[in-house]
Length: 189
Image (cartoon, one colour):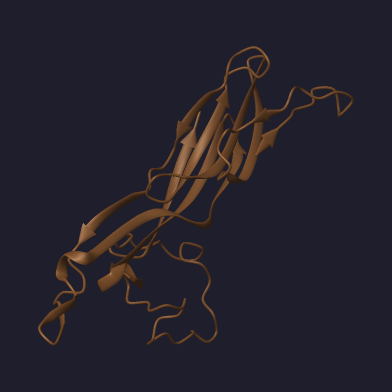
């Protein structure tokens, strides 16, 4: 991913800034002026050790100060005991109980950002999935809220007519920490 900026309506451009990592994608560039300084934020998704993370490169005064890179979210993975009981075949544990894992990371295209006054407001969709490794290491995945392989739960029935988004006409219920998707709101000053 590369960035070049023009401060004269496209007549000239700054030297290209290249991120050393070839796994960065989905950039968003936001600029705002505060007390004569040009604050520039470059948000993007990057591959961390455990999954997709949201990163930020920020300039306190573009062209005058050096940029600082920050990791805004951290992908984490942990061992779990899934499935609850080992699967046995001919006296051999095909799915040993210690073979499970749970990963939380930014979902596919899972963020959006906008300037709001003097702040940058970022919404991040964090997704948690679980899976296990069969014997010989072949991965099988299932999700925390009971999804299996596809994007639709087995007992899903669409509402007729479709409802408005929560909060548009009524208070939003508290989020359930066990839900597969968690919406996070970040404010950058």
